[in-house]
Length: 290
Figure: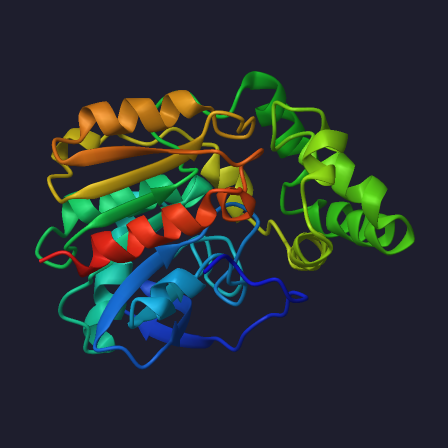
């Protein structure tokens, strides 16, 4: 099953007051096993993307807002290691003794890897989706633009302008946004999306915010990939401009039990690739492995 083809909506979240600080989170599903999802930049706990595959596998989903996003302040574990500890506290508070997997999406990849390295007793497996690794990221131009457009003082205005553009000219807005997500021409990527996929993306983009989180995401992080001994799936597209395929190759080479999965998606958004049903089946099989 591919990702949702309906208009995007925000889901209910809760707050946990932990020794490490406040964490916003969402816990959904009735499964006896749980996956922990660290979403990427400009995302927060209430925005779910590509999670249907976990429900299909009979798993509950725990999704916290990373530091600086949503209602999780930047002071709650401002580093991936600090937030891994905070998330371990959250799992303890919720009575979760073991995670079927930790999932790292895009800029959430380094937090997922740090979680697996620092808390191996808690994490059974690792799934990385278009994930940022420990190579230099982002490039200098993106870093400068990110700090100018998405710092906490101006990001609300940046996203307000983007929402206005999406309402006025959704196709033009999507082409503008897709330019940073694919090495292919934006028109080509847009043409490959169905009407419902476009609706999902426009809905998602209208709800994104950067808070204090995105600028923090661009800071360097200690490389812990070699310390991640759990079985791992590293899923990425060679057409991703936002996070180059070299990140996936580097991570798969560094982790002793990793498998690299080459997505045929036209962009960073692997859930909209023509082969996503194959990838989703692989994720379900991986989660069901003994």
